[in-house]
Length: 241
Image 1 (cartoon, rainbow, N blue to C red):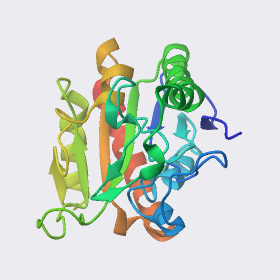
Image 2: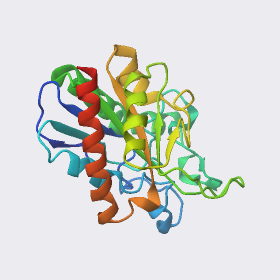
Image 3: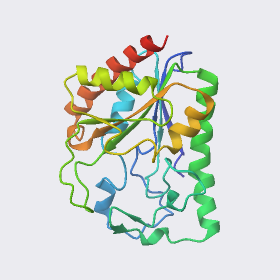
């Protein structure tokens, strides 16, 4: 059985915790999603590029990361457990027939993967008391659905009610000469389940970033954004002190 999370790095009090809900495209062998195997390499299955960035970041002293280990098509960790879309029956216009399941099967997935992951995130935040929680995602350059075309942002910063760390992140990322989306390509006001329950609701400083996937689909880009995020997180931690 696939373990529900992966932890990388050494815990340090008042360090930085990197949380990656959609790090993996793994599907447990007992689950048949009813889709073509090549779709597991698509953005609908996971956030391309972010797993390695989190692992690279956590090789630096003071950084710890926790990564989800199953595909977002198995269970979407960035949702609330009572939401229908926590186990999606379609994504970006593609049907996921294997996710039309019974309540018993749904609860089994949540109990195997969703709840243990979130329980561990909460325990890390409680025990390590990070100075900043970075919620790390990536976004596809364009969607199948809609006619927006290529998304112009290289990185986006999301937040809900708490804005302090994210405002700093936007400024520091712009200082890196990046094209930064403020609440783009998604708004943290609308899509915020993990950052709200694991940080905002308990008064923990956080920011969420989304990196465009074509920039981090390879090691060179992953290493580049690792260094960028290390710099901006260190600056935010200093600014929050």
